[in-house]
Image (cartoon, rainbow, N blue to C red; front, side):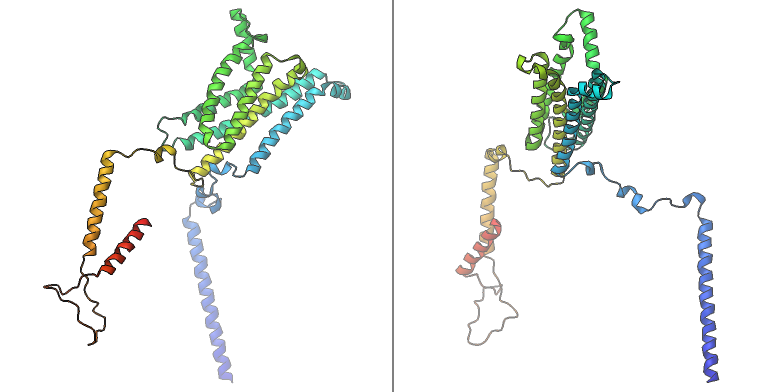
Length: 363
């Protein structure tokens, strides 16, 4: 009994000594690593901050129509709010007392509408640049039509700045004073005519580009209609809508900017999905009706003739008997040829072989 107790005590001491030695070795190795590591080598971020885990620029393209609709509704709500403030400027001035109706109309309503247009145009410029970065890699665009997106991005940035600054009116008054020509009221013709020519050409190019995406085509066509109606209302308006003249001149350009931004979002979504191969395209009519050249047709006939001759030769291939097949005395021996000892395929076997090859070609 005492002998067993002493043996157990020795085992415990040995295990304790081994555990202490292992812990000492671990502490020594850890200290050695700490000493060998430079002061600036200690990582401050985890693996999730590595560049392969960063979001790509295409991740910011909304995939759901609901998100695009909410962005469009946000712009509409801001524009309508600004117009309500402008129409009720007199009532608001009476409530606040110290603020005049003109300040409500110009500073609050006009500023809200201007900044909404500027934000919408900046968003449209960003997505136009994204579309350009993807569309320029399209293999069948030999004429470089994708370059219109780069121009659209720069023009959208300039229009965004002008929405807040209002430089077009200042430049128009300066040109009217220098030349002595007053085109349209308040010299508006100096900026309206160039804007109509350049903007109309650009919108037609964009409409042609987005024609394969129906939703984007609808948005761009509606935006162009808003710009045209706003230009007509600015130059001429019937007497029965004279009281809505200022509202149309403020809201219609804003609606055009919002629709143009919506069209850019929709077409950016379409391009990203097309790059990922998630959009099916039917074969073009021109490719299906393209005539076959005479040389290619003769080559195809020659190749089909070679195939038929090859099939005939393969049908005449001699197949030897199965070495593992059991042959009894009741069955006759296969016909022996002169040298090879192989038999020819029967007519039914050749017919079955041709049918099998026909099915394979059809598949």
